[in-house]
Length: 105
Image (cartoon, rainbow, N blue to C red; front, side):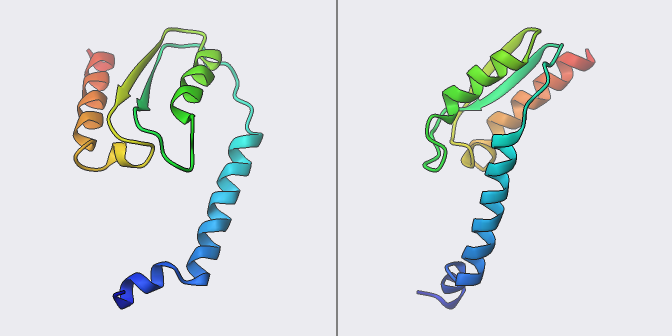
């Protein structure tokens, strides 16, 4: 294993990652969203990230409950992490550009 790769699994790095993930999950679990009174577009990943099973469907249902306006669900290729990396990032960028142009008219 190359020396650089060995550092990726160092106890210090793993401890930092664990603390960050734990903090994020606690924050998400304790958050209570107020209703959003407007139209929205949810960009939702098609793939499943191994650490977030079922997230694809859960997020759609969650935002359906939060948004009181029209909610448009748009699926993009990739999982939670890869949907914003090549080659999938181009799909997300095009969608965001179209949404921005639609809002700005």
